[in-house]
Image 1 (spheres, helix red, strand yellow):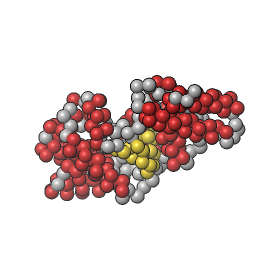
Image 2 (tube, one colour; image 1 turned 60 degrees about the vertical axis):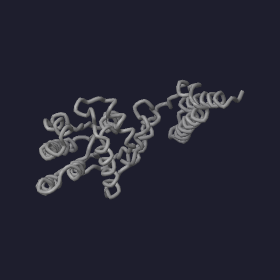
Image 3 (cartoon, rainbow, N blue to C red; image 1 turned 90 degrees about the vertical axis):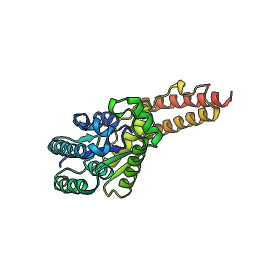
Image 4 (cartoon, rainbow, N blue to C red; image 1 turned 180 degrees about the vertical axis):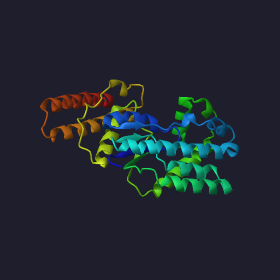
Length: 273
């Protein structure tokens, strides 16, 4: 493996594919997305897990192995961002298989796993079960309708246990924050990833300031807390701009202007004239 390999992991519905699609171009990497929809057993599995768990799991194992062989070849040419890691397959297998089926799976997995590339860094997207169920319902995939909450909770706990003993480099991301709609959240994740991968700092965009975030209908404490959080993030941008080499005076001036706007919004929300 000649280039770095970033894998994104987490429970169904947490936002792995979305974040992979956002990070890949920002990092200059090739996106590799799991081809779960090609598994013909998956819709049947969600209707009858006991009956279809084994064929579903074996199909995924072989499909993921094939895709990781292609990924390994890609790493010879360029860095990769993937929305899953090969190790997740075994996590699902232990959740859904037992007895002879699990024993047979383990033999096959052991033969294949040693031939797959290991991620340079893993992002573990963590979210509570309520958030996961809401996002699964929102994307409304036909075979996920009526998703069993108990299964998602068991899967969430399995991921927690997996990363509590994971020995490779990984970062935990609070995925209850909306990195799609909040540019500041995405930029924070991007900076953490770049730092963990040892990449140089990227040119930072201006922090986003929208007055709609300070709605008069929101509770006063909530409005002030959100306004203060936005100002804190903007001050972080200001600190980076002030100590950048070379310093860009226009960038500093624009960020200072945004700080002034945010301070004015805080004063308005606090009732300070």
